[in-house]
Picture 1 (tube, rainbow, N blue to C red):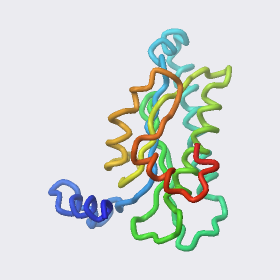
Picture 2: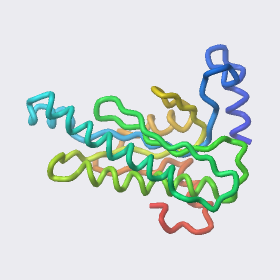
Picture 3: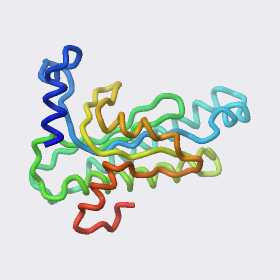
Picture 4: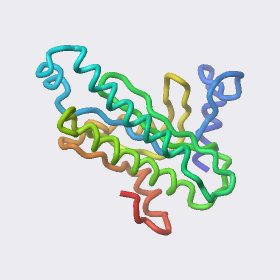
Length: 192
């Protein structure tokens, strides 16, 4: 029901027409918004912008590799056509796993959330390695989103953005929408 309401609101919007040629389709899924704790100090400590950018490129590669791995995993779910990806700006990462809203696969929401959580675990571990020493914090939300080559927008993004900086520790936590997906999963092992 909520997905239809969101889609109807987007379709009637004068600025976003999800039916227009070339614009992204509306998706449903999990999105994590994260940033590095103490990034200004990290930049000052490294001094050389080239070193900072190199570190960010390595971390970007870790998130992109996780998205690629998740998209190649064999799935036993009918009609499974997920979209995985990551978008970056400075030390901020938007990492997502989504499907078209018409998918009827059982437990698909929990599978998407689990895939996102496992990808985050690997990527943030690499970011925290001694060569990089960046600790990420943020939030994961579940809901509508649309993605293009440059942007990720939607209700899930808005929910995660509203609370991503509330953590004063290196942790990525679930918003109420993501908790509802985890709680509804028949087998919650591997969801965080």
